[in-house]
Structures are given as C-alpha cells and as structure tokens.
Length: 329
Image (cartoon, rainbow, N blue to C red; front, side):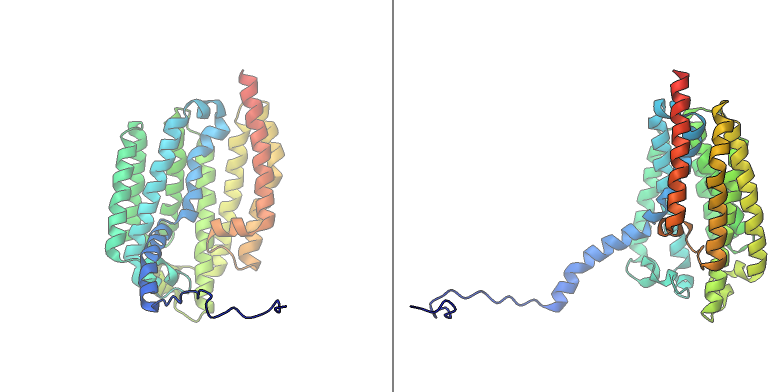
C-alpha cells in the first residue's frame, strides 16, 4: 500500500514559475495612481458642503423642492463642479507652500502624484461642464455661480492673504450656495438663514485657522510661511471670534425655523434647539480640548457624538417637513 503522503512522481506536471519585474509592476500601477490622484484633487470629501444648495428648499418648502427637483439637482451639480475647479486652481497656486505643511504636503500636486498639466486639463473640463449645466438653469443661478467662481479666483490670487477677509470670502461662498438653491426652485429668500449660514461658516473657517496656527506652532514652524494671514491671528483671538459667530449662527437658525409655517415652525424650533446648541458646544470642545478644527467635514464624520446629534437633529427636521407637506395636501 502506498503511503498517503507519498511525494508526486517526476511525471507530475510542474506549475510554471512566473517572474515579475518590479520596475514593470510599478510602471503598470502608475496610471492607476494618477487617476486616484486626480480624483483626490477634486476633494470629494468636501462635496458634502454642496448640500447647502438643498437646505432652504428642503426646510422652507419641501413640497416645492420635490416638484423642482431637476433645477435643484442641476444647481447642486454646478456648484460641485465649480468648487472642485476652485480647489484645483488653489492647489496649483499653493503647491510650493503646501509642501511646508505637515498634512497638506501629501496633496496630489504638492507630493508630485499629479502633474500640473494633468491638473490644468481637469480644471478646464470642470469649468466647461459647469458652463454646460448653467445653460439649463435660471439665469440668476448662473450669475450666482459665476460670482462664486470670480470671488474664489480673487481669493486664490490675493484675498486669502488678507486677515479676516480670507475667512469672510470663504463664508460668502457658502451663502451663495444657499441663495442659488433658493432661487433655483423659486421660493422666497430667507435672510435669517443666510445670516445663520454665514456666521456658522465663518466660525468653522476661523476654527480652521486656529488649528493651522496651533499645529504649525507646535511643529516648530513659522505659520506665516504657509499662510501669511496667520501672522495677524492668535489662538486667544480666534477663540473669541469663533464663539461670537457660533452664537450668532444659533440665533439665525432659531429665527429661520421659527418663521416657517405655524405651528410647525415654532414647535420645530423648540424641539431642535437642543441639538443645535449641542453641536455648538461639541465643536467648541473639539477645537479647544481635542485639537480638532483642521477639517470640519472630517471632524464631523469622525466624532460619534456629533454624528448621533446630527442624525437626531435631521430626523426631527424631516418629521416636521413631512408633516408640513401632509398639511398642505
């Protein structure tokens, strides 16, 4: 009897030995790395900011948002393309400065994963796509998106180096998103919402400056070499203005919700105020004690407490919107 573990005879077929040249393997992976780098260059994690286009229609007039979904989504896509184009232009301009930053030096252009020529090509494609979308939307929406691009171009070229002006321009960009979404569906402009969004985004932008200043100082670098506007800021000053703007944003939010169709507006304002207040308190805690604030979007998705709070907040708002739609029927 042959042993069960007997070695195979010499007549057994042998498996082919495949040799891979490391140089060839690296060259084969380079196109994939370029595609990945181009995708990262679009800043897809920042696309959530485009949801501000949907804010006013969904909260103030959800029934209108449903009937005007095509222009609303077209406006959203145009802002996503325009904002990605702005990010690419900014990264092209700042790739040398970004190499001095402990985190931004890993960006595709600063690290060399994407060439300047490829970035310019992608930028042109995005601008052409934005122009094509705007041809299908109301003229005033096109004017707002064009204004957004013009302001951000000015920001990248000069305004980003002016203290306080830099964060104000960024915040205006978010207000323009809200305004464009409002006009796209043809509902009334909500001043309290615009003020609340401006102050909230100003607080987040100032919080980002605070994080940059603290991180670069802790690393032993000169903050002004990366962002000249940081020379005019200090951590205590930024702590104060962040707090002031968050309080103003909270007031604007309550005023906006309260003004909606009674009794749902006042009731919803009262029910959701604790969630809004918790978000303010948690953000202040995160930047003051947790060293957060560098990327508000990333901070949101990494913090479980904030995620749960936002989820509950959105659930209450959704219930109020559904009730309002049902009442209109």
